[in-house]
Length: 307
Image 1: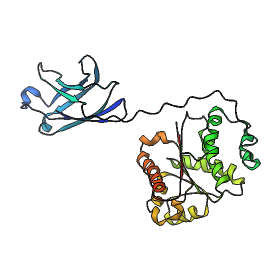
Image 2 (image 1 turned 180 degrees about the vertical axis):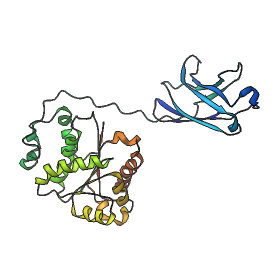
Image 3 (image 1 turned 90 degrees about the vertical axis):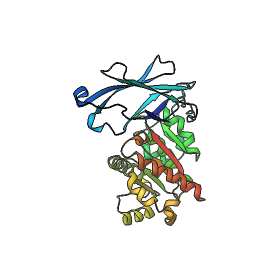
Image 4 (image 1 turned 120 degrees about the vertical axis):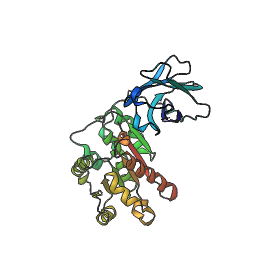
């Protein structure tokens, strides 16, 4: 047995266990398969942290078999765990591997979540702009509790912000605060909105076309994946919506594309889907925008939305 451990968070460890058979296979005795219980025990051997069944087939006896799983880890960090592999049918056929945490470095603790304050709902007039207020009238007269609490940060500052709140809690309006600030403070600025799926981009495009299309200063556009057309859209529009892949194609050559370097506001929606099929490209385009900001004199504000 050999094991490689990697911390995912301060409370979760990923274990990659490699199993190699160390016995002679006799088909008359073992038939075609042998079953083994794979157990992970705590440092005292009193608690089973993980259990799964491993099937060894005779024709793969000489090969290495890799199992990957996660186990919890607690504070204070124990010195080690024990991985035990036990035959499901033979007495005494077992092996134990101590997995030491002596050199294991855990990630930093997550900052505590922001408590939702009991604030008086903010009226739409807090935007202090009849033009902006018209975007929400007549369907909305006051903002909800979450929107009220984040309004000052998003509308009156340029801080990067992550908003993690349940689905249906009005996170899109929160992002719109940052968009309205950009329109107010940086008239020649450009906002790029990224959502992981085309259907979400289409939904947001229809909504914003209906509401923000009435603002003279807003020129709305959507990337399609056709690079030549997308470059024209990026140059012509100051509110650009896209799935991750089209923006990934445009931003890869950011050094040659001034309009990518000068994005003022970058909004990433549905960040909780970063563990899904679109997660890698979603992470890449967001990280790239941070890198571009660090390499140029132009600062891009990043606003993330997450359930």
